[in-house]
Length: 196
Ligand SMILES: C[S@@+](CC[C@H](N)C(=O)[O-])C[C@H]1O[C@@H](n2cnc3c(N)ncnc32)[C@H](O)[C@@H]1O
Image (cartoon, rainbow, N blue to C red; front, top):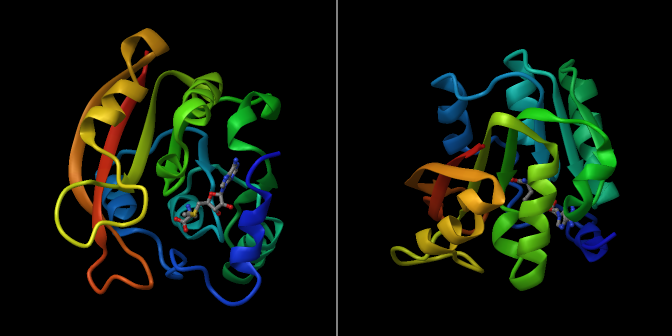
């Protein structure tokens, strides 16, 4: 399983991206009816986005490689009385879940992969996303000052999620990713991508 060093980010206080709140971009997508059916949050961290979507009534599975983050997410779910499932899984091998989802969420994971890993990740996402299902990718963008690490261009998103690989990009909107070190968040893209 790749990404095991990620666990260290969660062991000594909140990670830089772990604001303790759902991302406003995801809350807005949910508020406008953008979630449906079974939901998968890939690289869910301590679960704020998954818990927000679950609190709205959708069945949610959050997966991550960081066991410490998953333990925190499960504790929050129990404390808040929210039914959400959290499990260890590698985003590069989601087919091993043996499940499919109508809505898939990536908040801050896509931009950490480059090259061959990015190709493998996109194929892995395709293996668990139902046809006509929706994938949301919230990632750091290359537009504007104060960009986050590993910024991504619109062209990179369109190249990664191409019709030839089973995806149709429906929208790429400028947004913000909130972090613990950006006062008003970092420039981001919220990509809405349909599985075809
Ligand atoms: C930048 S953090 C974002 C966490 C969460 N989505 C949030 O918004 O707070 C990226 C997350 O992806 C997880 N991750 C990294 N590589 C992974 C992999 N191969 N499979 C599953 N999760 C992975 C990390 O452990 C980390 O929790």
